[in-house]
Length: 233
Image 1 (cartoon, helix red, strand yellow):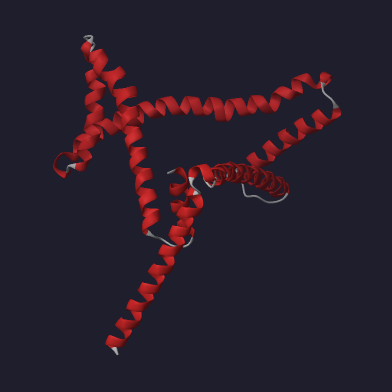
Image 2 (image 1 turned 45 degrees about the vertical axis):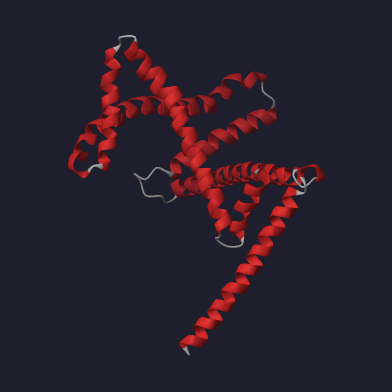
């Protein structure tokens, strides 16, 4: 099944076809089933059902707010979902903003400044690296400083920030590509594994069957088009 679904998904590189749709629907169905199971076992049972069973009735309030989100699918009472969304956005913002400031702002500043507290024990190469990181951070910040027109020295500094941003985005993109290729290697490894004799050459058989299907489908489709053209003429 693993080899078959992999080949089905790769068949989209040729064109959209029933095999790809089968794999796509199975993937989405399995994903939704897994998500539902996780929601029931990790959220509904331990955080709602068990507390209510033990007499903790306060959990009914957030439960009602959560259920109210479903009313958006009923036009006549969709306004009820606004209360759930209001609490969800307010609570979520209260959690996300401090965490974001701590991880994306304060920690970044601390990581940039911290090396300069150990200059005495640092090698020249490490000092250069720390200065490069600090200088790049400052240049990038100047690039996003829009209160003043970028001209003169400010423009030069912001242009340097562009190069640092290009390096960052290139590294991030390269990391993403490497991660995707690692997934691709895993799929190829499965195809190679199931191409062995003990698996009855499953990869080759499925691939050959699909090729035969595409050839036959193309032949019959072409024949129908020719007949339709002759009838129209």
